[in-house]
Image 1 (cartoon, rainbow, N blue to C red):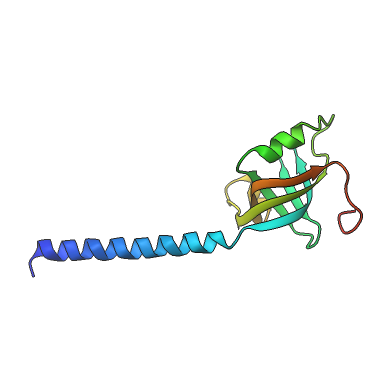
Image 2 (image 1 turned 90 degrees about the vertical axis):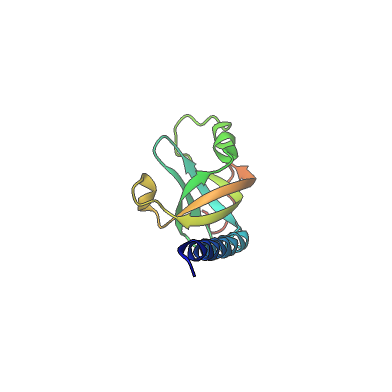
Length: 125
């Protein structure tokens, strides 16, 4: 076989492998969406969420910016006042070079289902 044919075969093989890997990642991410309920605090330096059921703390990335906007609409006098939220999200590993490195995972919010100043009785109190 000449070098040109080997190069073409190698290129097609690489394309097939990359396509298969990307397909698996899309399928994997599709199933990782969760609905989490807990306390959200927002301020100039910290955006955090505490899962009421498990007690885990997450850095928050608001992919649609709807959570930050809804929080801002409460017009708190001081930052970091906790509110109760229910959100659709997925979890990713936190970036070790940013503030989020202090948190095990980052919660990427895709949809706000509920946000209220009233913290319900139960594990959140």
